[in-house]
Amino acid sequence: MTTIQNPNSEAKQKVFDLMLAFVKSQCLYVSARLGIFDLLDDSGEQSVDSLAEQTNTDADRLYFILRGLAHVDILEEKPGRIFAPTEASSLLVTNKAPSAGHLAMHLIEPAQWDAWKVLPEALEKGVVPFELANGKGVYPYCYENEWSKDTFIKAMSFLTDSQVEGLLEAYDFGQYKCVMDVGGGQGGLIASIVKRYGCKGILFDLPDVAHTAKDYIAKRGVDPDVIEIKTGNVFESIPQGADAIVMKHFISAWSDVDAKKILANCKVALPADGRLILLQSFVPDIDEPKIEADGIMPGIFAVQINVATPGGGWRTKKQFQTLFEESGFKLERTIRTSNSLSGMEFSVA
Ligand SMILES: C[S@@+](CC[C@H](N)C(=O)[O-])C[C@H]1O[C@@H](n2cnc3c(N)ncnc32)[C@H](O)[C@@H]1O
Image (cartoon, rainbow, N blue to C red):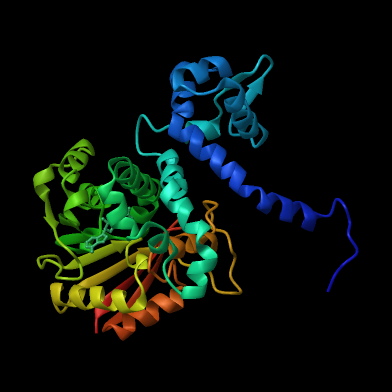
């Protein structure tokens, strides 16, 4: 049905906003990558000329980018081409702790962008866009490129840091003697669990990530000897020794076929009374709200995961439950936190 065109309709604004959403993303990306948010955070407001000089860029072209960011309230523009930091730009600072700036740089980095460019061809062929564009998967790509690796690891650590408190409030890990985080990245989650509940921990991930984990865990104020760091590939085997396995934003990268192989290895690793705890954002069902309390829209994030990885993206609760039940696990309870991270606890069926 074609409606009569209202030049200022909400629908038209929505379409134009979406059409130019990539411009906002690119302004965010290039500014984070140039360290503009860091410079403003370190030294306060300054002219575009000063920012251009420090970042070795053309001041007139940079001005367009920064003014664009001011128009969407990421920066504040003052007379005389001066730019000041805002609460939003402080979230994008990348020269201190892992931040939303690392997540923005990871999601918008050129290799990711290339995946979107081949989307029509990937859809026709039914292949993973990132792999079509880059000739390899997102993990090998990141781990072979120093900047991408560092940015990816910090992006994941940022996500963990921003969600872990809500999880620890919602779920009692004190019932376990030893918890293993499979695909646990640098160990932020397992360090927080061990610190809060006094249990033992195992971190299991690929060697590329895990070798930086000891330092990271120590920096979190946790005795690194309380957490055993084990490296390997989930498709080969998963170490034994834990009575609970957690997997946060991990299984979502894999297709059902791959996920079932990983779950079979989890089953071998766990004792008969062990627990498998899936930690995820779930895509809402058709009749559920589309946006979480922390502003995340799982259905949109799921598209990004699906473009970048072979996985089913972020599945719905029902889809995850079916996947786990078909892999020999039984749902014991669901976990709701105060943010977009939810969970399900499974026993071995
Ligand atoms: C999306 S990240 C999630 C990291 C962490 N769980 C979090 O929520 O921040 C996926 C993690 O799985 C790890 N990973 C990928 N393939 C793996 C494999 N075959 N075996 C073990 N770990 C793997 C990656 O190195 C990465 O740390």
